[in-house]
Image (cartoon, rainbow, N blue to C red):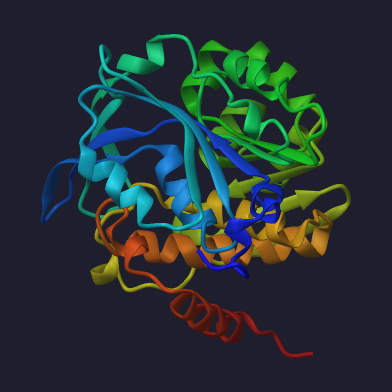
Length: 320
């Protein structure tokens, strides 16, 4: 690193204010045409890779002794990812997940979920991470998410992800967590499950009543919705041909990574910034689905991202 490289100064540490906690896992994925086993997966992996195109990002997670060295090497290809908070537990096994996508690639069946290291105590937060200002709580138990949040009393914003399992078995804990965070990202079926409202706009409004300042509802191939105080925005998904969808795994985590990476880089969370952040998250997710694991993201350039954003803006333009 040269003298002018910010990574050689304390400025790089100051900039590293985006932090994600969740899973780093080993995935097995079946699609109608292909199958891969033992590939890098997990919410932290996809989130961090996506966010790294916008700003430095820190990971707090744990892996076991069976975690392949090539998985670490893949994450290290992304220059802006810090792995100081990735705890390696040699006597444990890494979180593992297997899924099978149906013919339309919009539905999937879970083949197995081996929690392994996730059944143990959560990893500690390095002291050097405690100045993190933008916090993303990827999918874990709400009680653990709440405890993790207490490590960052000076945070600028915190955003949480959840899933149907926690809505079912930890509903009260999730509601309590929503009083403490600034935003939540969830899909439309989860929003309906949490609120009882099938309409995504109504569901988002009800979730705001729980406490967060904004709600992002993901609708898969139909885009996403943002509810922020009295403001509402809707964005389509990036138009992709079915033949380009190789593996949808990690699209939601990549979307969140792109969104949070943009917000942290701008250091703003007003409605306009949020709306723009959703567009960047949509673009990053559109690349993720073009390959298995992080393969496409690892070969991506910022030029590729910017070019696709221009195409997306053109497709979304509405005349007066």
